[in-house]
Image (tube, rainbow, N blue to C red; front, side):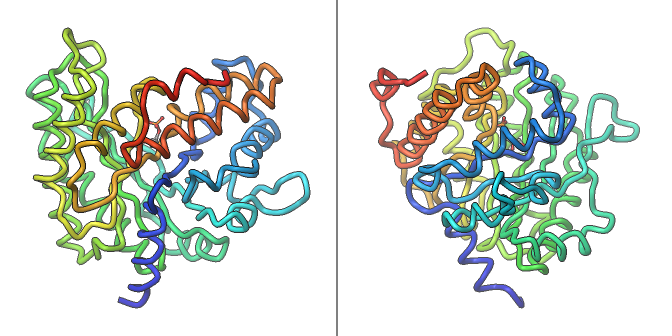
Length: 341
Ligand code: 13P
């Protein structure tokens, strides 16, 4: 493979000890929702100003190995006219790019989604590589509907799309993050989430193998094995950690470069506590770290919207440090006593 060494090196750097990823790749529609919740007008300039805080602040290099950007953001510049991707690189942080075109309704399967975005992807990868992207992200979503869904159709369609995307990314020298997200929505048990996550991973890794994707140059962005949001008696942090670690160990090949987690609607502290508990168990063949959006950004956006930039930055650095500690199993609840927000 042409970019084999580069892909391996980038993937390894993405999961370097004590580091993780910031997901800042909200589409304009998602950004609109987040801004509306805090009463900020969703203009391109406001998005640029907010993301300038996330991408250019001093100290972020202590906990970030990379940031996932949206198409608009990789084309934007800071107040000095330097492209955000350049600012990140100057800090030793790898710029990444979300390339999927979103999850659309899966035909003939009500309530299920399939992620689109393969059309023209080779050309888009060539452009993103020129703009400095070292890795990319593609997210597929799986909704648990009782015993009926996810269906085989949903598993197969999404895994096929992700594998084709991953192959195109590697062809361009860009590390693919594959993100099969089992949604938290619903009242399902943790056992049901385990079963669905296991199936999702099995089908995905088979599809990656079919397309000859090199796993040493792939990062899995996983959802944790959790009880549904509306379930009664939701599993505690230790159970979540044990079940997630077990599921990954049994269904993810050892030669994968690394695993990062999405937060998926967990609170900031839950997302940190779960990652920490998993790393305290340890004994895994790959590093486990974070790739959170909401569990890092929620307090930051709220404070920024209130006009308190200093506190917003303090909150950002605090969550960054907390998750950095958790990625090495060194976080404790005491750390949250000194929360600056
Ligand atoms: P959350 O951490 O808010 O789930 O977002 C992560 C992400 O990138 C979803 O694609």
